Length: 201
Image (cartoon, rainbow, N blue to C red; front, side, top):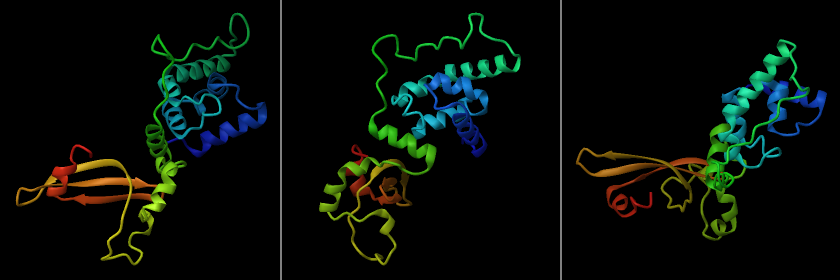
């Protein structure tokens, strides 16, 4: 949801005029070419601004004013107008709820947003448990189907979604979507187990 041309514009601007100083410099130099709301949302989710501002939640909550600043800067350039006092307009403060600074997304939410933007995990939340998962002899989901039919395997995954269903006999069951470091997979949880683990799910 960003586009190759938009990213080519970012690279060309950075090569021509040097690294971006901060998020305001980015939107002022790129304007709406690579700084519209949708593009900024996906760049923040993917962590593309971590070098300018590592607080992704703060960046995400600042997208609308940042996009407006970029649009205004592009309009000023197009009309050949300059700020009354010279230079760029003063950057507004980023949202902090008027109190303490906005806390960043927890690691699991950062990872989920990154996955949503990129379609893959650059750093899966499971990575920090790699040693424990190996000791438990967990099978990676990517290995499923490779001669394991009929085998009993141990899986570990981060729950990403669930759909509850009712069978023809009236029993409740669920399809649960999970992800691990190697991919996504789905399991079926039948009625007895579902009754035991519904609160956990």
